[in-house]
Length: 504
Image (cartoon, rainbow, N blue to C red; front, top):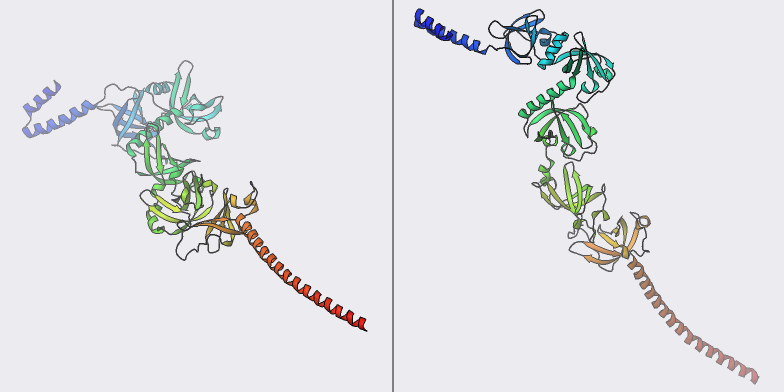
């Protein structure tokens, strides 16, 4: 009806150009009037425009001639300067009508200069209040909200509970009112409730911002044995120890410290369990990209054994690159049940590159001695050689032979009593004389024997003795015949001499 009357008046009394202008003005007025809120409820959010700043208040338009006030202290920056200007749009929350003024708050710090009635209004509106922690009481803290004494339990002062008195005494915080008992004038506050609400709000904002593959800044919060927790600005993410770098990390503290600022890449997001998996490694160059050029097939490499598995051993060639030596390629010269029988973690070994698979991040190695024409002269079966102990295994002894070849003496060929501690009796470097039992030309495997040397030497000694005995016997026989002839000659001479004497 109002619209129709105004429209008729404008049509009857104004030229066409003026009618259009007045119609537009009316439309604007009508639109503004339609946005004027009705009765405000405590805690209701209001978007308004600042119309003036005076004294302790910032005045905002609530539509029509209605205005509200916001405590100017809420809108000052750290230097005490007012951070808003006339004409700015601002979001606030209605508290209550006090002294004929509609009080609002931005929730930035919570309401502070409150009376007991105003605290009740804030409680009913679900709005926070600003209070100063003044002293410690039994079970909590005394907090002054304006001139009203309130109580905050230890468990409600922080997200993770009470830490120490010094952290809070004298500090001003925002609190949520948990309980309000008007008759007893008892007010119980919670800072934790507000912190949890802020946390939830930050999480919701991050859910909209974060995506897998995104690189974001973070700050190291705590270091654990399994990884590092970092703060992403409201929520924690985990960098597993495997994602800190391409190489093995024995001590995280040597790389990161609490408070360090880092850039991480988002690897996985599980909002249901609030698990964010992050990576530092993903931002570093992948060493495997150059592996083909650095480790050509058939090249001899040197590395440290870092892990034993039933199927073989992993040898670290450089940070981020491990090679696998299959159990059949350990160069033992015999079948073994587990690599621990012949090698140990931490041992430095040499191996030949057999294959480089960059796509699957795999390098295959072999510790079997590579037999190349003229490179290593393999002995022949039956030869007696002098070598040195390379390593003592549970199954036997590895011996380095002249020319660089490695041979293996099984325990059964050591010539020692059963149960003998060969590691103690024959430490690395001990010279040994061995006999070659078998040579596998295809695989470069040489089987040796120590007991065979003794048997061989005994046999050779016996043969030599027998030859010498036969020679002695022959010589003895020759000496016996000559003696008999000499005796006969002597006897004949003596006989002749006797005859001559008797003749005389």
